[in-house]
Length: 115
Length: 115
Image (tube, rainbow over all chains, first blue to last red; front, side, top):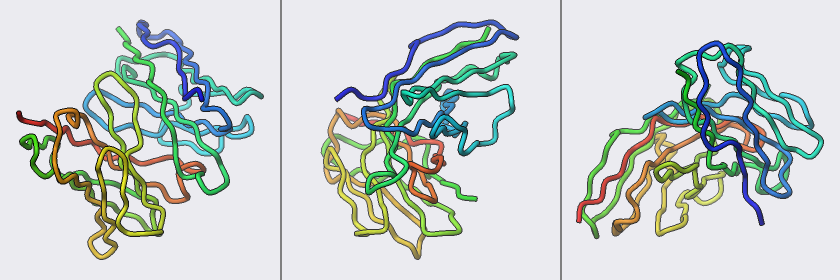
């Protein structure tokens, strides 16, 4: 049973550029959440996608956007990159309903460095 | 809004000693509570979760946590520390069960195991 996968594993960008990160959820899961984890901090919730729509959003600017595809995979896009966007970006998948809906399974993350 | 406070950014114990990692939460409604572990350069792995069933929750790798509503706490314990327990530990809370809600994480506690 494949877990949550993310690509790429590492990425280096310069200020002002745009970046796209990708996530494939755990088999059978249809909800994807994205988190940003700055160095030495806990993850912060960016947004969640279900049925190809953004269902919930954390306190992040509009530069952060996403997409979910019919196969439930998801992308996180960040425009006009800032130095402060350097972080580990984590994707998590879950079931929206059912007895195990409360559990989010995390991928290994994409480490983004903005220079 | 909910929040999580983890007391102690670093905790050091000897191998074989009791591990106690503290977590206090703030929530306007009965919460769902989680402990995750993160090993270096990896994503998050679920240790255990509280979902309003038994207040004493047992997880993987010998860890357990007790939900105390009166103290708004969900401390993580393990009777005997092992070198492989060295990692970053995060407490998290959600309101609607995680799968339909973003998680709010604490800042994490770095567990150091002394030989």
